[in-house]
Every structure is written in C-alpha cells, then in structure tokens.
Length: 621
Image (cartoon, rainbow, N blue to C red; front, top):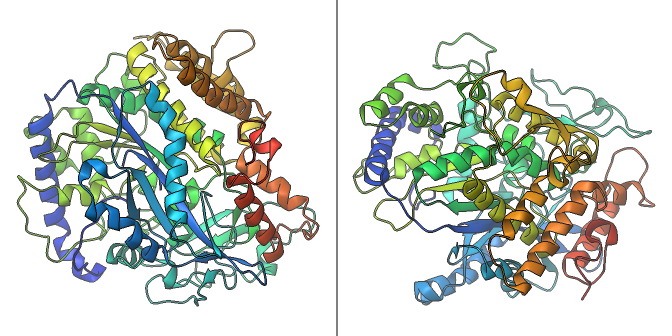
C-alpha cells in the first residue's frame, strides 16, 4: 500500500509545521530522479501483478469460519501470518525468493507479489495462474483449521455487529467509527496514522454514502440505525460508512509495467487511463457494503470517499482562508491529465481544469521538465503528506526519494506514473490500478494476461484510445452503476488506428456497450479490444500451449463482456435475492453472509462448479 518505512509517525497537529519542507524537498528529489533518468532507454518490458503485490498486486482477505455457528468473520491476525511468510525473504538469497509478502491496510489482509517481475511476453504468460495458486497455497500453510484465504473485493459484513475474530468494539480513538473497531487496522504505525490524520485534516470523520439497492420491502435509512449525528445528513436510501477501513479494507487487482523509456511510459499511461473505467466495469465484484445490498457494482467510490481528506474550504463549501485550493476530486480518483508528448494527444483531450501548485511547477520547469509532466506532478503536490516519520525529515535528497514518494504514493489514481528509484536497475513504470480482484486464480490470471497483452499492443501498434478526460470521468461514474457491464454505454473512440489533428474531437468517439468495446460491433465498424489483442498475438509466434491458454483467457473475458457469464457483483446479487432467508429488504443477514462466503470459498478452492460465473473455464477439483 504505497510508501512504507519503519520509525515513529507524527500526529497531524505535529506534522503541519513540516508539510512545506516535505513537499519542497519531494520536488527536489523528483528533479534528481528526472535528471538521472530522463534519457534512460531500452529497458526490457517487465510486468507483474499485485493480488494485494510489486508488479502484479493481488490482495487477500483472511476469514474465520466458526465451526459451531458457521458465522463468518474477518480473522484479525494477518500480521502473524505475514511474519511467517516473511521468513523465507530473510533467509533465502534474493534470486531464490519466489514471492514477496507485504502488509495491507487491514489486519485481515495480505498482499502478495511475484519475487521477480515477468520479462517480455510468451511462455511467461503460462506462469501467471500457477503463481497465483502457489501464493494462495503458501498463505494457507499458515492458517488455522477454521480460517480461509479469499480474493474478494469487499467483506459483506464489514461494520455489522461482531464481524471480527477475535471480537472487537467500535468507537476506538484512531478511527472514531461507530461501526469499525480500531483493531481492524494493521498494527504498522503508518496505517493508524493515515486513518487519524485523514480524519483530523478534514476536521471530521469521512462520510461515505453510496446508494442502497431498493427492493420491494426496503425501508429508508431512517428506519435503520444509521444516523450520522452531524451536519452531513445521510440521504434517504443510502448506505453510510464512516471510516477509512471501509475503503482501504477492500481488495483489488493491480498490474505494473516497466516500459522501455519515459516517452513510451507516458504514452501507454494515457491509453490505459481511457480503458480503466471499462476494466472496472468488466471486473465488477462489489455488491454488498455494511451488510446491505448496494445499488453500485464496484468498490472505487467507497475507497475514494474513505480517504477523502479535503477540508470544507477545499470542497468549496466555505471561502478559502486556511487552504490554498478548491479541489474537485478526492486524492483517490481517476487521473486528471494526459502526459504524452505524442502528436496523437490533442490539447482538447486535456479538457479538465487542472489545479496545480504554481511554485512547484516553476521549480520543475526551471529544472528542465516539460510543461505536461511538470503540471502532472505539481497537481499531485497540491495534496499534503499524510504520514511523516519523525526521524526521516532531514534526509539526503540526492540518494533518497522518501519525501517524493510520501506524496506520490498517497495520490491513489486509476493510473500511477512511477519514476525509477534511485541507484536501481528499475526503469520508468506505469501502474494500472482500477480492477476489482476476482474470486478465482483463473479469473485474476485472465485479467492480468489481457492487460499485459493490451499494453504491448498499444505500444507496438500505436493504438489511439484518446477521448476527452471529462468523458473518462463520465465513464468512471457509469462503471459504478448496477449492471453497467450489460445495461449502460461508455464513451469510446470510433477508430483506434487513426489520429486527427483538426476538426471537432466530439466526432472521434461515441457511446458503446462493454460488449461492443471488448468484442466489437456487429456492423464491423469497430473490431473490439479482444479481437485486436488476438490479432496482435498472431504477430508474436506463441507456441501452441501458450496460444491455447491465452485464447482461453480471452474467451472467458469475451463471454463476461457479452453477458454470457456473470460478473461477481451480478452473481452475488442473485445469490442473495434467491436465498430462502432474504426478506426482499436489501438486508444481508448473518445467515445469508455465512452461506455466501462458504459458497465462494468452495468455488475458489475448486470444490464445486459455478457455471453462471465461470462456465466451463474453471473445473471443480
């Protein structure tokens, strides 16, 4: 979860006097990185996942299943499991470390990544699913008999009654939540400091509100015990949450790519930013929050609101007196500007008014950085550092990047543009961040492989996905809608093989369904992303085994996009609404949650088949 260090962290009131210093020196550190690496070139294409991980991220949730009551709860001992998992990393030589394990926000979460990035494309693609399976098995070796490890986006009973093992009470001093106990927060100081400092900076608890799914017996919120008790009243038929843990306690699937040079990284960053909302919709797996069926399908807005540290002045609710800027987004949101210097990027595409720190911008320009990239980083630096380590304030800017990473790593956007670390063989990278984690290793592998191939196709075939950034923002909103993968249309470029330098940009794109974008239009006017990737594969000379496996992944995603297979969100809704205990009131009872989690665990472990979710792509063991 971004930049972490050991040491004592400062409370917000003690941090304030160091903020300007941290930001000033963060910009200096950035310029040092820039000058050392701006001409760097010919780095190999490396990539990986984070299933909650470096270079593929996958995040896992630990659950406890009571053998007598069958109640499912979050198991609050991931720190103990991580201590065991980390022993290999300490004992083995670096080249023998298969996986890296890192803490995540929740005391019930672990993040696993490959020990080494994948290089190039080819038979490396065969290793992904096996790597995910082996990671799951490695965690399972350290679980108790009544525990399970799962890749689900959101635990359905988070914030409902006693939802942790061991039990813990809300109203702690860190989160001050009426729903979540502080014990759900990872014991590393960074996480509790983030939680408290976001709350203290904004001057009140976070106020997460998402629409409640309205069934025939659903009551408005005031018939539930949901009142906030402050000026930020809950709207009728909304699900209220009040702590960072409701967002950062969710899991995701992230992929990082190392590009050959900075220009390629900037170009592919832009193109992937356009497809981010589309992959968010296609990977939808979050339907239940705080024990209630929501009317959204994905987690993104929940996390966005959970870490929104903007003050009332920054939100535009009060005149600017203590703060410098009105800021139109949370620090966890979609990107705000394109970065490429390619002729494909018309100025009209950057149509979102960009708020940025002009002093930092001038420093970067004076240091030799171009205007587009300088504005990008000066925009990130309108945010304050949230976690300052007391013993790491005065550091050597020529050899450290802690202050830069402090700000960079707490701008959680759909894409992250990542400069090389100092004195490292790691190059310019881009991180693709929007995807929801999937239930099975097969599904996660399918998304990882698709994104890896799409990234190379974009670069090698000079694909052009540009649309105005405001339309990307509209797509992000659309991606949240219940059933958006089937029922809604997204803005997308009509022709991805051409660029226009004049004329209205409005003529370059239209609204398409997810099926049309991924599988192509019946008229043949647009081929579709999956057929484009299939054609690209034909140029790569894959062996038979690799071709068959990759095409299996692509066929799965094609069927998901067409609606032949359900998203996890759609499947979950159907499970709840057809459960004998469901009262058609939008409430997910403990009994329903128990059956849901145990069913999901049986599917992910391969004990049972679920054709509506996986078809014949994931056979039961």
